[in-house]
Image 1 (cartoon, rainbow, N blue to C red):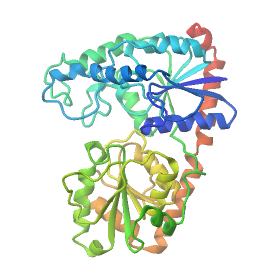
Image 2: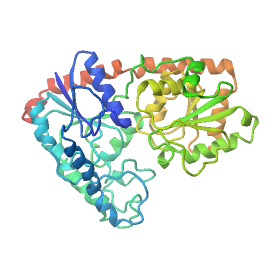
Image 3: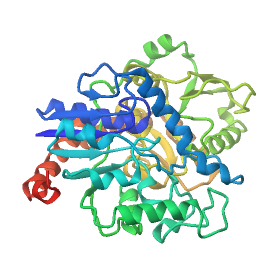
Image 4: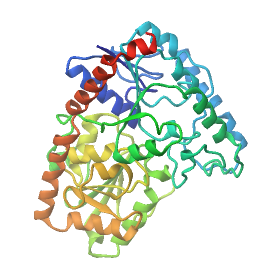
Length: 423
C-alpha cells in the first residue's frame, strides 16, 4: 500500500509533528508512506516538497495574499483565520505520486484551495487537527456555535453581518464538499462531538484515533541530569508550561496560568516553586508570574522536549480549547503528571487524580489547587507518575496509532473506494 499524507510542513508545528510521527509509525510497520508538504525541514527522502527556493518563497507570499480579505475587518481579534481562496498545484503533484489512498492533515497557510479537495480522485481520509474544516475560516470557534448552521456574523472577525467573509467561506465549502466521499479522523471525543454537530460534516463517517508518539524517544530521563543539561535549579520544584506561541496565543491560556501562579505565590509554595516556559523566548516587557521564570525558547527536536519534561515536576496546560493536547501525552510519556482544565481534547488524556488533575473550567483557584495537589504528597506523586507513563503505553504509542490507521485504510480500499473515486 502506498499512503500519501498532505500537510503544510513535515516537522514545524504541532500538526506537522503529529503527521510526521504517523508517517514514521506506518513505515515502522512496513507501509510505504510519503508526505507532501509546502515547506520541508527534515532530511527525510519520503517527504516531498518544492525543490526550488523560489517556489517556497512564492508559497510564503501566498499566505500574505490569502489573508488580504481579512484587512476589511478592522475589529477582528488576533486569531488564525484561513480563507484558502488561492489556486494551488497540489492535484498534478498527487497524480505524479499516484498513491493508493490520501490522508490529509493541516492544509492551511494557502497550501490547498478549498475546491482542490474534490479534485483528489483517490480514497480520502482527513485527520482534523483543529476545527477549520468545520467553520467559515476560524481554527477554533471559542464560544461560537455558528458553524453548526452556516457561520456569518463572525465574532472573530468582529462582524455583525450575516453575509460576511465567514459565510462566504462556509458556502464555498458547502458547495465544493457537498458530495465528498471521505472518512474523517478525530483526535479526541470532543472533536467527534464538534464534527457530528457541524453543518458541513454531520453526515460523514467519523473515526476516533488519537495522536501517537515514539515512547522510546519520549521516556523518563534522570531529573538531575536533565536539569544539569538545561541549567535549571536542582533545589526547586519546577512547573512547566509550553506550546507553540505559548505566551501570545490566548487559546493556550497563558493569562489563566499567570493568575493561578499569583494565587499560589500567596501560600507556602512561594519559596518552593519556579516556572519553566518553552515555545516562547523571554518577552521584552517582563511578565509577573510571582515566581522566577526560565524561558527556554522554541524547541524543535524530540530529545530536547523529552529533557524538558523530565526536568519538570508537573506540566500545566491551561488551554481553553485543544483538539487533542500533544504536550499532555508527551509529558505523561516522560512520567510527569499534567494539570489542565476539564475541557475539550485534554479530557481524553488526563485522568483526574490518577495521572494528573482536571480543574473546573475555567476556575483559577482550582487550577492553582490542582498544581498544589499534584506536588504536595510524595507517595501520591509517585503513583501519579507511574500511571502517567502507563496511560501512554496503553493508548498513545505510534504503533497503536499506525495499526489503527492501517486497518482503516485497508477497509476503505477494500470496500471499492478506488473505483468509486475513479483512480
